[in-house]
Length: 402
Image (tube, rainbow, N blue to C red; front, side, top):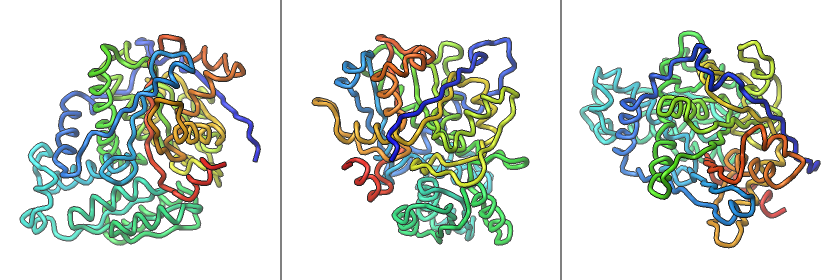
C-alpha cells in the first residue's frame, strides 16, 4: 500500500461576502429545527450521542479544543443516517395523513389507528449501508416494508445489518449513482416511496426532509459545547458523499449565525471528490465523478452531488478538501488508540476522516499552507463528527491492527 498522505484544498472566497446572491436556508430555521428535535425526542430510543473532548490531542496539536461527536451511539444503529431517514418517513406519513408533524410522535405513528389509515407502504432506497439501515429500521418500527439496493463492493456485514431490520436488500453490480437510479425505477414499477437524499428535478421535498433530520446532530452538539465553554466552535469539519449531511449542517450554521458562523470545511475522498472538482471548475455548476470509485470511505463514494447540497455549499461552505484513504486510516487508528486521558472512539472509514485530516495538517509541516488556508491557530476550537462506528467490523479491525 502507498502510505503517502495526499491533501488538496480550495477555499471559497465568496462564502462570507453578502454581495453574492445566497441560496435560501429558510428550511433550516429555528421552527424547523425545533420540530425535528421534538420528533426525534419522541423515539423511545432517543438519547443525545456523546460529545467527547480530546484534550490530550488538542494540546499535542497546539489548538484550544478538539471535540468529537460520536454518532455510533445513535439509536443502537452505529451511525447517524437514521436521523434523516426516520424524519423523512415521518414527514411523508404526516403529509399523507394531512397532519402536521408537530402533532405526530413516533409512538402515535406506530398506533393501530394510524396503521389502518395508512395501509401497507413500501419504502425504497439505495445505500452504501448506513442510510439503508436507517430507512429499514424506521419502516420496520412503523410496521411498513422496505426495499434496499446497495452498490457494487458493499460490505456483506452492512447488507446483513439491513436485512436484520426486516428489509428486502441486495448488492448490485452498479456504482452508487446507478444504484440510486435502479431504486427509483423499482419504486416507480412497484408503487414504492423513494427515500433518497439525491435531489433531481421534481424530487426535492423528501431530500430536504432528510437533510432537516440531520440537524439534530449539530443542535445537540452546540448545546453540549455551550455547557462546557462560552463560545462557538471556530471550525466544523464535515465529510461529504452526495452532500446532504454536510449541507444540512452548513445551512443550520448559516441560518443561526450568519457571517459569524464557524468556518466549515467539506472533506471528501479524492476518488469521489465531486464537490471539490465542482468548486475547482469555478463555473458555479455541479460536476460529477463517474465510474468505479475505489475508496475505503464507502459512505462517501458518491460521484454525483445532490443539487440542493451543492447550491448550499457553494454559497456558504468555506473550504473544500479532497484527501487520500491514508488520511482516514490515520484518524481511525488515532481514535482507536488515543493519547492518555482521551476517550477511545470506535470510528469507521467514513467517520474518522475529519480527525485524520486535522491531525495530519497540524502534525506535518508539509501541510502548513493548508493550515493557513483553514485559518487554524492556537485559539482554534474544532468540532468533528464521527458519523459511523465499525459498520464493517472486519475491515475496521484490520485497519486499526496494522
